[in-house]
Amino acid sequence: MNLIVGATGLLGGEICRLLAEEGRPTKALVRRTSDQSKVARLRSLNIEIAIGDLKDRSSLQSACRGIDAIISTASATLSRQAGDSIQSVDLEGQLSLIDAAKAAGVGHFMLISFPQAPIEFPLQTAKRTVEEHLKGSGLSYTILQPSVFMEVWLTPALGFDAANAKVQIYGSGQKKISWISYKDVAKFAVASLDNAEAHDAVIELGGPEELSPLEVVGIFEQLQGRKFQVGHVSEEALREQKEAASDPLEQSFAGLMLYCAEGNVIDMREQLRNFPMQLTSVRDFAQTLR
Image (cartoon, rainbow, N blue to C red; front, side):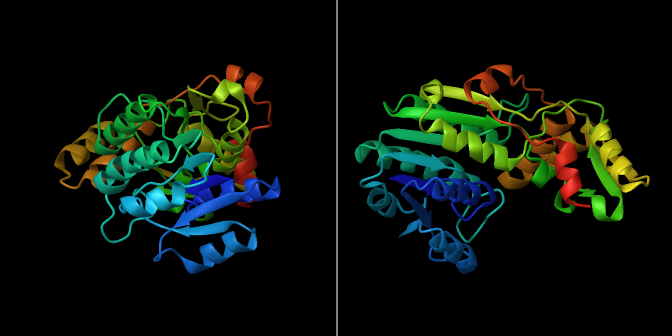
């Protein structure tokens, strides 16, 4: 039995769908306050529902009983409810989940994180602390570190408004990024359950090509046959924003924007040898928005 934590989120939901498609017994940890339409969708996939919360240790202990593998995608960054914070969810909640998994005799724990950024911010500090705790837990572990999700960063919420041909770019826009689809990350997660190369391993993940944000804009312009209005937020402004922020989440968003501004290239040759699959390109994604 697999337990998915973060099952109502973008990535967690896709992992559940793939597991259900393969007929793998799966349980989803959801909160009483979770979006009930998303919970209903999980039930429609014949996924067992466990009520619990990363902030409630006893619920984690109950959810982990009889579980062979855990995949945790949960974070307070995109799905934030009362009492949620980087401290309570991304740090303390994940640490409690690891401890509950160990106490329940879970065989394999998979954590979704992200690659090392050159600057420190609260979300990264939490992720690295949890990674080290997992490595030292005695559990068989997999830490997946995907790069920038195109379905998140190439959307209006983060300044990439393709429908209205308006884009806000962090930094110069000239540094390369290994954009990746969350759907491909889900495929790697499911494939990692049974792949010996993924056990007791930290695996960085990127897409099929490295493109600068300006090159991404060029792809959208070509497909749409029009020029985009492009604005820039300088790295200096992002650093000032990070330093001025008092909330850890705001500091982390500024840190993640700097992470994108400074680029992140991941060589995927070894990963694709171990996990043969066709990766989604930015052009593939852009074509779905036409």
